[in-house]
Image (cartoon, rainbow over all chains, first blue to last red; front, side, top):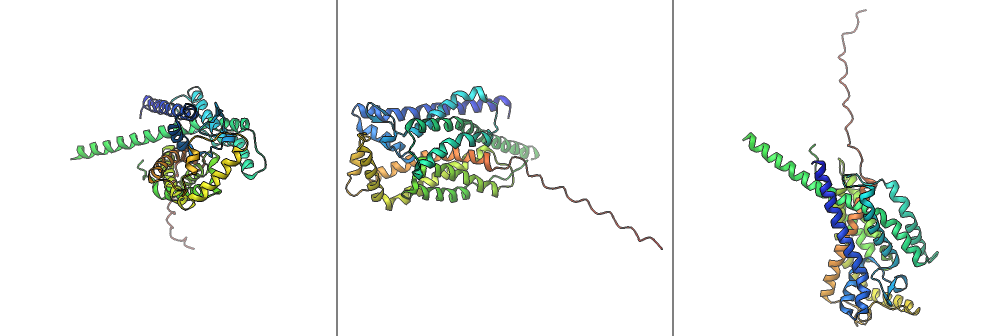
Length: 176
Length: 177
C-alpha cells in the first residue's frame, strides 16, 4: 500500500477517534447537566451507560451544580488525558507511522496511577480527587498513540488481504 | 509471504471468560474501577495466548481484533455471573451510597428508584440494555488492552527458521596403508 494510502487511513482513524472522544467526554458532562435541568430519565440513562466501567461514587466524582459527573475523578482524568494525547498526536507522531510506541514509554506513565489505585484498594491511603485526576491524565495521554495506530493497522490489514485476494483471482484468471 | 491467519477466537474465549468472571464477582470486580483493569488485562493476556499459538508476526490490528472479541466475551460472562449476585450487589451499592451520602454528597438521579426496586432484579429491558452497553464499553477497552498486549508480548521480528545443516562431505575410501 502506498505511503499516502497509509497516511489517509491513519488520519481517518484519528479523526473518528477524536469525534468519538468528544462525544464520550460530552456525555460525561451532559449527565449532571441533564440532572440539573430535571431530565432525570435521560440523566439516568447516561449514568447507566458509564456504570460498567466506573464505580461512580459521588464522593469521588467532580460535580456540576451539585450533581456528580458520570465518572469518577480518575476516569475523568484518563479520558481527558486521552483527549490531550489526541491533540499532541499529530505533532509527536504524524500520520505516517504504523509502529506501536515502545512499552518503555507506556510502563512509567502507568506507574503513578497503578500505585495510587492499588494503595486505595488495599486501604493504604485515600488520595484526594486532584491526585486521582492527575494520575489518570498522565496515563490517558499515552493511550491514543496505541489506539489510533492499532485501529489504523486493523483497517490496513483488511485492505492488504483484500488486495492479495484480488491479485490471486487475477492470476488465476490469467492462467485460465 | 503467505502467512496463516491467526486464530483469534480461542484466546479471546478463554481470556474473556476469566476477565468476565473477575468483573462479575462481588468485591473482586472493584478491580475494574482502575480503568477496567480486568478487561484491559484480559485482552492483553489474550494477546499473549495468541502470540504463543501463532508462528508469524502479529500486528497491532491482530491485537485489536482479539481485544474486541475478549471484551465482548467478558461482557456476556460478566452479565451472566452477576445475575445470582444481583440482590447482594444492590444491597452493597446501597450501603456504599448511603455511607457517602452521610457526607452530604448528592446521588445521581434515578439511583434511588433503582435500589428501591423491591426484588433487587432488573427488568429484561434493562438487562439487555446493560448487556449492550457493557459489550460496547468492554469491547473498546479490550481493543486498548489487545494493542498494548501486542506491544508487550508479540514477536517483533520474523521467526526465520535456522539454516539447514550442510550435507556432510562424502567419505572417501580409506587411505591404503
